[in-house]
Each structure stands twice: as structure tokens, then as C-alpha cells.
Picture 1 (cartoon, one colour):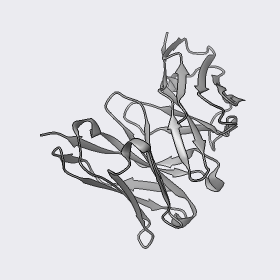
Picture 2 (cartoon, one colour; picture 1 turned 90 degrees about the vertical axis):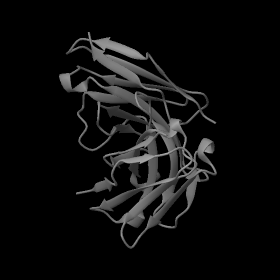
Picture 3 (tube, chains in turn red, yellow; picture 1 turned 180 degrees about the vertical axis):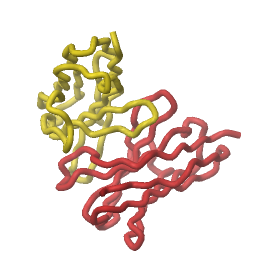
Picture 4 (spheres, one colour; picture 1 turned 90 degrees about the horizontal axis):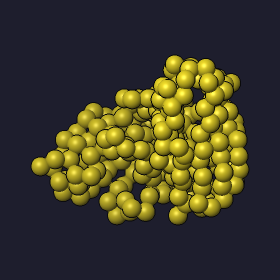
Length: 120
Length: 110
């Protein structure tokens, strides 16, 4: 069965960086895109960016350009999201999500979420 | 940049009743729209994609309609497990995939 398993919770100081991993199983990793979505406490969903697991092409949300980097390691079927220069308003649950096949849109499988807390 | 809005912000419904949720895009997104359900402490769950196609395993009481800028999610007869927050999301695959979520509608018990 398809699973996306994310790394554990992180606590970081303002200005630091965080790197969250998302290990995929149960499907051919390189056949699907992966997006990262975050959710601040009590708030809605915010799309952060997308990466093709096939060729590594990326597309980041404009507000995060320059602070976020998404990568994949096809040898371990793992996607990574690194966010730099952390601020308190980056405190959120971060999700990875698999895009539907054939770019039909929508995310059919999600990781369990990783809580990143930014606090001095 | 496409902006998504949802109404109402909160919808109070009795079990067994019909719920109608609206989503509007600031410009046409064709049928490139998905709906998600999210319960507290859980990841979102895909309900509808392509504006009207139910995702795998989604009950028939959930239906989506609309195209262009106006979309609707209808839950025909609310069950206890349907009380949750619902988000719409538009997607654009050219030149690279890009997605935008609406702010959500909370469906609670009347």
C-alpha cells in the first residue's frame, strides 16, 4: 500500500534551517510528483511547492522563493524539504503529498505531518 | 496569482441534512479543482478532483460540480463522520504544477 512517512518533530531557533524528509513506499517513486503543504496552528492549508521525482524539476510558491529547497533521492525513494532563515510564523505542521497520476491534479496520499516549532 | 475564496466560513447542519459548500476562483481554472476533507489532528483527505470526479473510496453522498470560477461541493445527507473542515484547491500544470488552496469551510453540528 502507498505510504508517505515523514521525519519527526523539530524545534528550531529563529534564523536556523530545518530539513524534513518524506519516505515513500508502495509505488514507483519516480512516476509521481510530490508537493509540500504546511498548516500553521489553527489555520488553513498553504501549498509550498512541487518537485518532480522523475527529473527533479521544482516549482516553489512565490512567497517562499529563495528560502525553500526541495530535493529527492531516488535511491531511497525519499523527498526532502529544506526551509532556511526560519521565523516564528514558519511554525506549522508540514506535510508531503503525492500528486495524482497523469497530472490530474490533487493529492491522493499524504504524509502524517511534521510539526516544526520556531521559538527562541 | 489565482485567489480562491470559500463560503460560508462555517456551516451548521443537522445530521441527515444536505450541505452545500461554495468555492470561487478569481479567474477561470477550467475544471482543475479538487476538494479535501480535514479532521482535527489528521492530514487532509482527497474527496473530489477534476471538479466532479470522486476519488477512490469516497462515498457517493459527496458530489462536486462547477467549472470556470464557480464550484460546489454537496454532501447529500450528512453523517456524523462528515463534520470537518473542507478545502477547495485549484491546480495549474503549465508550465509546471502550481496549486492554491481556499481558506476552508467548517461544517459543524447544528
